[in-house]
Amino acid sequence: MYKRNAIKNIAAYAVFMGASGLFVACSPQRPAFSSVDVTGAEYAKGFELTDHNGQLRRLTDFSGKVVVLFFGYTQCPDVCPTSMNELAEVKRALGKDGERLQGLFVTVDPQRDTPEVLKGYMASFDPTFLALSTTPDKLNELAKDYKIYFKKVDGKTPTSYTMDHSAGSYVYDTKGQLRLFTRYGSGPKGLTEDIRILLKQAS
Image (cartoon, rainbow, N blue to C red):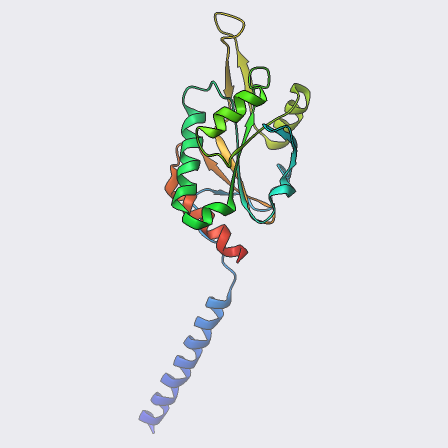
């Protein structure tokens, strides 16, 4: 009798554990990103900027692609070229899926970063990347919306100034929703895997 009850108890426990396992497996879990997960943020929802070809661009233009957006300027000595080089490396690492990645560079120095300068700058990293610009007034509004900082630092001559600015990139999913913020210095490997996750979610 005891043995029979013990067997029944073990069987019931096994059924309970199996059901529990199914329950856990079916529970929604947020993916573990390397970048900072900002899903649901109420800022940086979109833009209206002119690309280096003179075409007006909006975030919705890149529907179906993961968008990585970075603020910088072409005469930046280190942060900007490093960030864009790493993004180009990410695109290569994605292989065929690299076609579903759009790199965007927003200049915080529209005075010197003319369309011609921006076009040449993007070509040195990846020909599919686009540089975007706007007027100084609209740039200030955009910076507030995107919670980024930039400031002109005077040099020895009127044209030798530098720009202090925030370092990091915003990442949008294929539906144009802000999902991640990746810090400068994080390296391309983590961002590559994060973008793989976003592309997989879109499949």
